[in-house]
Length: 149
Image (tube, rainbow, N blue to C red; front, top):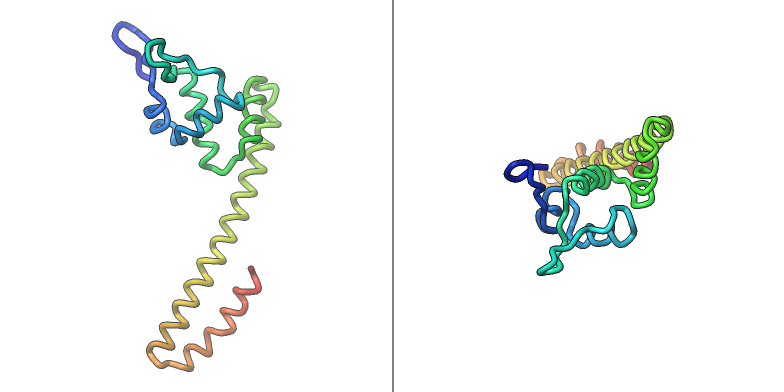
């Protein structure tokens, strides 16, 4: 977070905080509402939220974790464990290992879907070319992919 002149604190608007963290403005408001982040100070004249460096550090982490697929309850757990520091290192490792395993399984499902679509494209290409032998050879591969779903 950049400081202003002579170490002066720089405050970000909700739009700036959203762009930096990758979290939408409604999500930022929601995270404040449910207590993932503390109350955000308001500009006295307008009442608009102003995000400080400390809050932005938390939002940057939450944005990365959210984009990695962690749910709100996992974000809450992460923050609680983070507050405990190194004493919760094993629990943090378990949290991230669990989500890495879940993401790996999701990637495998996506690879299966991609393979299915590629074979379907090859099948229709063979039909477009009038190559019935090639189309017939693709059917067992296609059926095997369908079973993976």
